[in-house]
Every structure is written in structure tokens, then in C-alpha cells.
Image (cartoon, rainbow, N blue to C red; front, side, top):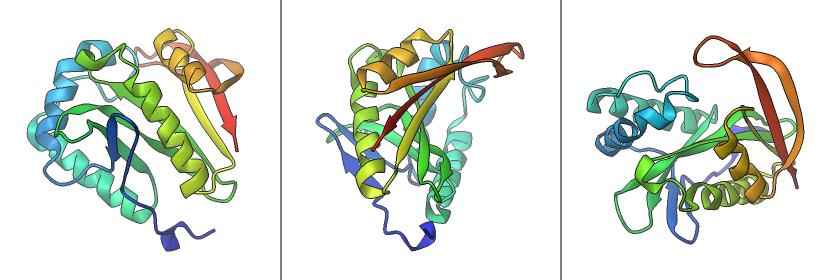
Length: 185
């Protein structure tokens, strides 16, 4: 399959969310959301070392759009439907267009944590991968210590396939165990 020939929409919706690829101009809201959530993100996300400036967040949004156009990655932002309020981020990563299979990653803005938004987004993104991208497999990987993240995967109907011991370094540079969840079409 040649992904460059696919007509992939850059926006879709769930019950409460507009899920879309970041666009030019989204940097202000992304900077605010990441800054607000930095303490919760820092233990798990290697990119969450410092609060991004508006300019840095804007540059990232533009890079994510370029990756989407090139079909190299599908970064997504989660907005409260009908508003410019960013709830969190997600996306389809580690893409293998031959299988086809994808990995979902996600984070939530602190003030929206515990309200089911990420689980809702993961369900919608999984459905998008299966129906819109003809995925055969969708994975979610996380640090074995990140219980909140693996609870999202379980609520979204993913099955634990295993735990890879000492699989990679965590953000502190220590070896970590990685949980792998998957859902098949």
C-alpha cells in the first residue's frame, strides 16, 4: 500500500471531542496545555522536560502537519468539541503500512484527567485506524509503572500481550519494563 496515495482525513470526531492533526496557529493552546500538565507528563514523556514556549509549540505543530502530509506519522490533538480548548494529545505512530499496523500514544491535560476523554479518544482513533487506514493491528505501549496509561488501554478494549523486561530506558535513563497492549481488526 502506498500511503501517499491515501486520502486520509485530518479531522474526525467522537462524542465529546474533535480529534485532528495540529495546524498552524495551534501553538498557543498546545504550549498552555503542556505547561499546565508538565508535572504529570514529566515522569513518562521524554519530550516533557521543560515547558515549551509558544514558538516551540507552534514549530512542533507545523512539523506534525508536515509528517502527516508525508504519511510518516499521524500526530493528533484532542479538542473539546466546538471549542478551541485542547484536552490532550495522541496519534498513530510507529506506522507499518505493509502490515498495516500502528501504535497509539496519548497524554491528557491535567484539568481533564480522570474524565474519560483519553479512553474516548483511544476508542475513536482505533476505529479510525481500522476503518480509515485498513489497520490489522493497533498497539499501545507504556512503562509498566504507568498504571493510569495501562488502565486506559484496558478500558478501550485492548488486550495485554506481554511485558518486555528491561526493554528500554525511561525518562530518568533507567531500564524499564514495557507493557504491550493490542487490538486486532
